Length: 249
Image 1 (cartoon, rainbow, N blue to C red):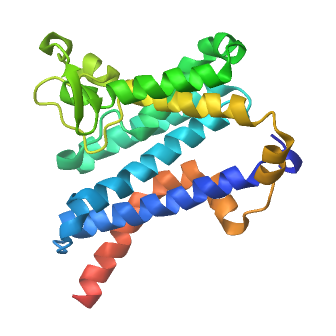
Image 2 (cartoon, one colour):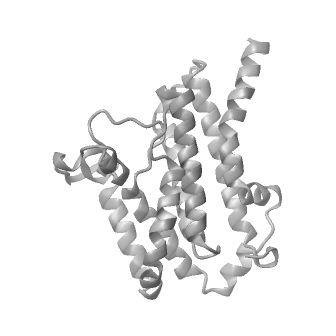
């Protein structure tokens, strides 16, 4: 969209989430690589922090899908960025290699919606949201071989579904699979659809559009350039931590 009609508040929300993610990754590096004792980080508070970041990013991405032009082009660009991260981590950080990370998933979700958009846009948006939320709730634990949400287990998924890289991309990682950042197509595509249907539910209201047009200052600028900043943030964080470690310890 042109600058006059841009929904700056969405950029601001994305900017806040990106800053939260940078802080989270910085804390992760301090705890894992530099041995900073932070007991709560790998417990419930740290997990809730991490989940709040990825849930917000995915919902916002699904919500904004209809706003931009050429979603197939955006999907290909983001997928390519995901492949770059996979290559870099395999070469320079094999112990923390990333397969099917958040960018790979987001690019795939954008592309998957291209052929589905016509059908999904014409269905009742509230019903689509409720069905998507239910399916996300049902399949949240599918990576671990279960149906259910977090500690609520509703059933077991057959072991035959968990084979190799292809099944891992879908949400069924085989034995020995590891990724430092793992967002498979399922269950996360259902959360992405929740964002997509939220757009259809809310954006018909003039008051929502008016609220989203409000300026968000520097946070909006950060959100507008979130992909570029995402690609650079981890090397920048590591460089800062290395300088701090060299000069102040």
